[in-house]
Length: 234
Image 1 (cartoon, one colour):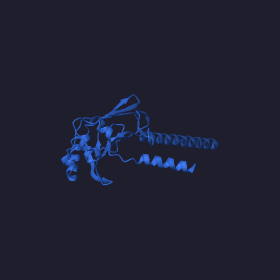
Image 2: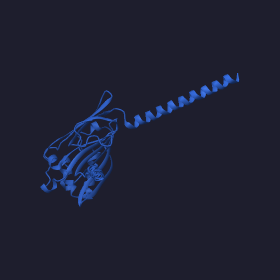
Image 3: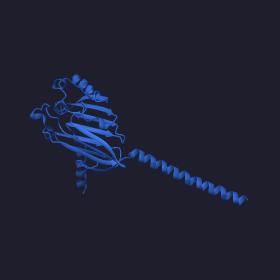
Image 4: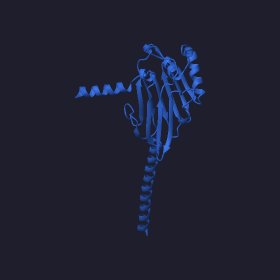
């Protein structure tokens, strides 16, 4: 029994620690604003977003090019770094956006189409990742690993379109495929229906309601005590 528990815990931790070769990770608020982190090997930036190979070959040029790419897309760049994993370089960008609906078709997102629309008391996030045509292909030995698009959502998730691990830790959903599939042009269809109220706002409202109710009860008890004391003194 204990061995089985240990195996399940190890499997869960390994799944949570998957290192992707190319990844979009979004933090989205209910008003459509948020932050996105994009990580990928230089050759995949070239193959998926069209970053020139001459720029990806030079670390300083790559960082400047990525900053310019995201700033020209109307985003505020937080950080651009070059890291290494198992001796291979990875370019990382973190940037803020004011409206997720304005990202599609910008220089930074030729490969990703996203929309967030209100439907009654819910919000529908829909999108599609697909590699643009006409971009350079990486060499065969550079096609290994997996790629993913993941979302950290602000509210309760009611449904999703085949997220690979379902809803993780309450409000995280993601889609993934192999780099080979992505380079071949296979699209990732993204879809989530969630509550229009943020978890934080709902929690604060619930907490405030509880405080108001407690104060009302205390006030009623004090009023009752004072009134009873007044009657007894009379």
